[in-house]
Image 1 (cartoon, rainbow, N blue to C red):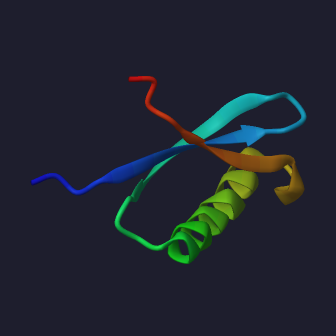
Image 2: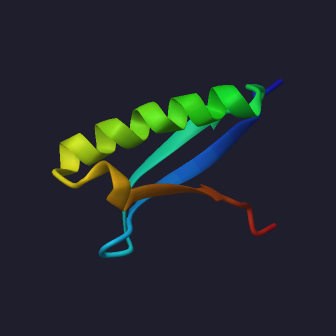
Length: 64
């Protein structure tokens, strides 16, 4: 049986470009997911040389 996952994209709000994709285990509670996403957000901002406040994430929903 597969573990459920949630997919997220990190976006630079100034350019609206997606700069990173990340997958989180879907069986985590919302607080754990948010904590993981905040850590990844900081890493993405540093790696891309942008301010932390210009990066945000959105969940990628299946269009099925």
